[in-house]
Length: 382
Image (cartoon, rainbow, N blue to C red; front, side, top):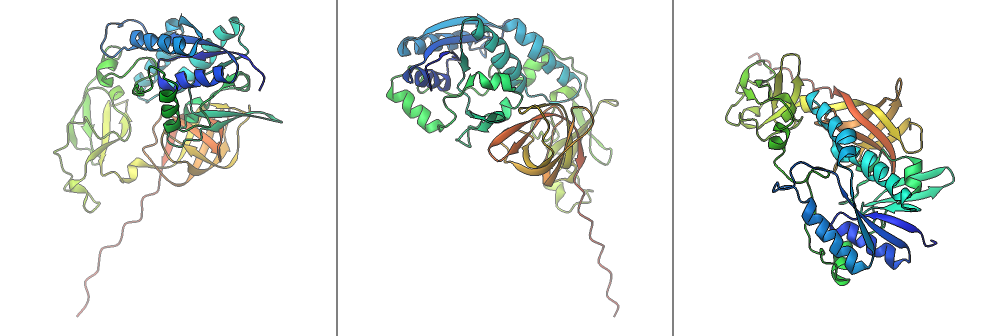
C-alpha cells in the first residue's frame, strides 16, 4: 500500500495507540486527532476526557506524531444524544455507539480530517474493509471476542473507501503484547466499557438528569401488581436486576417449576404505564420468532433478501434467519430458532459469513409459538 496522509482518532486507549503506531511503522504520514464529544460535567468522577487526552498526547509523543484536540460536543448532542433521549422517552432501548460511529466518528471526524488534507482516516476498531469489484465490504474482525462490525453496520461506501482499520486482522492479546514491546505509556490501560463518549457511570442516575420519572405498576401475565417501577424509560427487555420484586413467587403459574425462578422484564405498555414481567429465563414471552427493523442502512446500498445470519445485540452468536424486504426501508427477519429478549431500539445486523451487510433498528417482534401444553393424565379404569 502506498504511503498516505492518515488522520487517526486517538482516544487515549491502547487500541487506537497501537493502530497509530502500526500506520506510522508502515510509512504513512500519521496525524492524531483527539475528539471531545461531551461537555457539562468535566469534574464528574465518571468523565475521563481530560485524563484520556493526557494519555493520547503521551502516546503521540512516543510514536512521534502530531496530535490535534477537536471539540464535537455540539454535533454529538444534536445528532446522537438527542436521538438517544427520544428513543428512551418512547420506551425503546437505543444503542448510542451505533449512532456515534455513523454520525461522529465517520462523519464529523471524517469531514474534519478531509479539511486537514487527509487521504484516509483510521480508528482502533476491530473490523476490516475489503475492496472488490462491486465496491467495499465491511468484514468482521479476526478476533471473535472483539469484533466490532455490529457497531459499524451503518457505514457507507464513501466512508469505507476512506477508512483504515489497522487492528482488524489482530487479536486483542497481540495488541496488548505489541503495546508493551514498543513501550506505549498506556499499554496496560483498562478498556473503556461506558457509553460512547459519556463514560462509565451509573446509568439510571445519568438518565435521571434528562428523563422525567413517571412511576407505575409492575404486573405479571395474570394481571397481578407485583411492585412499582420508576418509569418505563429506565428498563429494558430481558432485564432481571433492579426490579425490586425478587421475593415474589408465582405459585399459580401454569408452567411447572416457575415459582422459584427470577423475574424478567417482558414488555412495556406505555398507554397504561405498565411494566410487564414474567418469571423464568425461558418464558415464551421472552422468545421471538421474527422481527421487523426500520431505518435500515445497507453497506452495498441495497437490501439483502435471502438466507443469512443476524445479531440482535452485541456479543450474540450469529443466528440463522431469512431476510425479507418490506415496504420502504424496513426489513423482516424470520429466525430458525427462538431469539431471547429481542429489544426494540437495538440494532438488528445482518451477516453473510464474515461480511457485514448492514441492518436497521428493531421496531417490532413476533413471539415464538409456545410449546403445546400436555393433556392432563386420565385415570386408569380398573
